[in-house]
Length: 541
Image (cartoon, rainbow, N blue to C red; front, top):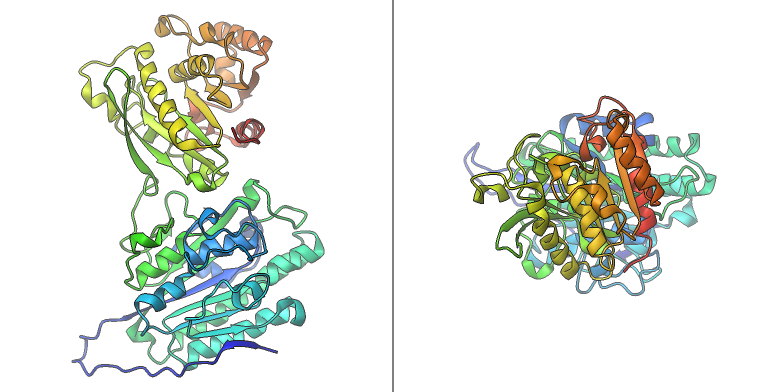
């Protein structure tokens, strides 16, 4: 039986009598959320309707969800646009929620555009009814259709929810619609797997997506409407059907935007689940009030910020010798497990070296500070902004104040988060020096191809290794490890207890993690790096 929290409000649509061709399309939005979809399994399933949205729309299959990867916090973040530290839901008990301060985006719509018609249909009661401290959706919403998935059975409940939403789309005039489908997640939990039953539940959800799309396209007024379809999931899962951890599979969501306002193609960078709410508001022409303190951004549609740096906060730090050091803070500290300090190789810059690396670090729950140190340039592309103040490139050793400035800044913002230094080539050597002098402030250090020998002058990597007392990982590509002097370095670092990884295939510096720069499989190196990071950041400072 359907649980109606609020009676349906009759909607009348008044069309102004304007000359033909002068009536602007009415912007509307449909958000479809499918619970617990592992994108890798979805890619193998028969999902023609979702595939069509991807083919014609903006999409990312490497979006990021919340920590923890649990439905309560994840759906709250998706539908509100803030991280869990604000809405205060960290599990599936919503009792301590701060929805009064941070309401769902439909409630935001009602607060500023009450003439717009809002509609929700779902079968997980904490979202739509008074259950477990819910509902997530507020009383101001025009119509909420709710059934209990546990009572009806999740396959049947999703079918009922879809039918109700199809009827609302077909016979009423909603402006903002949210439809929640829970069967895939529950099927995986019940079977303890990601097998045929789970794949079948995803395929059934795809058919329901098709029904919703057909209802939008068959509306008699559809030619005068600009519908934005937003499709996502709250979290991925493990092979045993569980979730809640910090693995790549659990942290990865997907983000799809389809409609005339969507910018077709793969979305650059890393969308987050909380970008759904902010993008929906932007499509409807509702500018987010700064007082709302939204953490999401506009993604995948016209007017969205472009580029992998679009979610980053620009930094301009002062080194102790007066040099201004330029960089960015990537990620959300409130939802991160550690802060990584990323330093580039000689002749390079942070943009070029880390463009293919930072998105995956963010998906795995890390914030990152990437800076242009003064010993740099454009050898990998891009521009080193810090170098604009220098006529000649300083010596590698002279860049050390830049690393100190970044660590000082990180200490001020990290709170209890661990800080990890990450260097590449010459900065790999300087990162070891930073670790040797600041053991109390760093949880670990990664040195990719740490430079030694004559080019490093008085600051070769070997000079500082013996004084490093925190966990350290040194990485080299095989072609470098076979060089006698490098083999000696690896041997001496191994005797100091450093973790050693030889990448095959691999290239010089941090680029050994970038599949665009390595001819071969970079996954073994990524696995080694992520395992090391997990081990040194398991506890907060």
